[in-house]
Each structure stands twice: as structure tokens, then as C-alpha cells.
Image 1 (cartoon, rainbow, N blue to C red):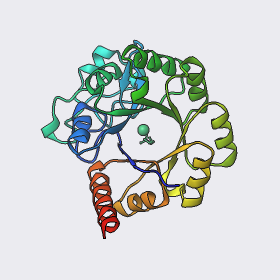
Image 2: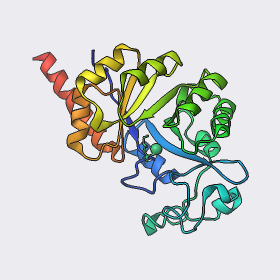
Image 3: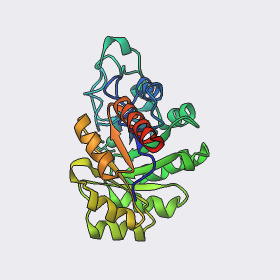
Image 4: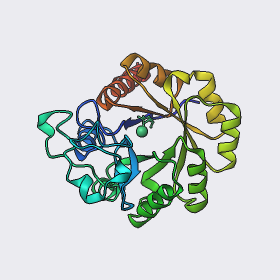
Length: 251
Ligand code: G3P
Ligand code: CA
């Protein structure tokens, strides 16, 4: 059975159009009709959960150095928009606390734990709990140990495992641990692998989707969700597809 609705997940926000992992990118995702966004988190030197992809600030800000070596005040002093375009000058690295506050009730957030540090899972769970947002997030990571720890620490928070490709043993272990979603590289997914995972009770979300042809293929093979930099293309494609289906049903 195919999913009724494909989840449109803006990758690091609508990162084709605005600087990744900033308010500008998440606002843009909403403006383009996405109801979900993926984001990445690290810990600052003073233990704050901050929203940034790389382990250093070098690529996406005007500063330099490891995120973990900088305090929140130092991170907040950096410009996180100009590298993308002058139009976004003044964008800041958000904290997860700020993002949860700003998008509560507006975006489902897929929060990727980047550092392999157990404390990050606990801190994220505490923040999600403090905002009462367990039903509006999914915490994901390539680090299986962190996700399994999260399942024990905060079983009410949905968790997903990021994988390069889904395999049978991974799927069995995930289900046994109460993990309900697999986030697999799009190129590794086909109709039969998705069907098999869904039969085991796993939702299947595709990532690393770089063009519209691949996006359309993943809809056709039955992905439950697609994480992509250009959510507007998927919103539009799903709208056209559903209009076509409605027309076919009435003729
Ligand atoms: O959520 C999956 C995807 O974001 C993983 O790759 O490098 O963009 O964090 P990356
Ligand atoms: Ca990510």
C-alpha cells in the first residue's frame, strides 16, 4: 500500500533559497508550502544546543573554529547569512530552543543529532519536552547508539535512524528498539525495499534528493517522505498529481 500523502521535508530549511539552518530558511520553507523541515544540531562550548550542520562555523558564517570550542555568545555574534547572499546579512545561528519556540504548531521538525555525544540526545529531549512538542518532532541520527539512548530516555519522542541504505538486520533491530522510521539515501530505495520496510512498520523517508526526476521517482516508488532543498517543487508536483487523480476519478 502506498502512503496517502508524501511528507515534504525542507532540508536544513528551504536551503536552495535561503541560508541553511537559519530562521530565513525555515520561514521560506513555510512560505513555499512545506509543513516539515529537517535541521542539524551541535553543542556549543557552554552546552547549548545550536542549529548548524558542520562541526565548524567556517563554511556558513563569517567566523572560524569548531562549534564545540565557541560559547553561545560567540556563536551568536557571527553572521550566518552573508555567505549565502548579502540579502541575508544578519541571520544568526539559532538555538534549538528558539527554533522550537518560533515554529511550534507550524512545522514538524526532523532534528538530526550530529555529534556522537550522548549528552546531545538528552539535551534535545529535554528541550522538546519543555516546549511540549514531542508530537511535532522526530529526532534522527546516523549514530544508532544515540537514537537507542533516546528511546530509553524519552520514549515518547519519535525517533528515526539515518542510514545510507536500509538492510534487513538494521530494520529488525530498529523495530525491536521502538524506532519507527528509516531515513535512507534516496538512491538506495526502490519499490520493493520500501514495501518491505513499511510491512515491518517502518516509515521510509528519503534524503539526498538532488533533482526533480529523482524526487518524482521516489514518489512513484512509495516513499513516505522526501527531504530536499527545494520543497516547492515537491509541493507543486504533489498538487498536480492529486489534481490529475481527482480528474481521473470523476471521469
Ligand atoms: O537528514 C538527512 C540528511 O540531512 C543527512 O545529510 O549531510 O545533509 O546532514 P546531511
Ligand atoms: Ca542533516
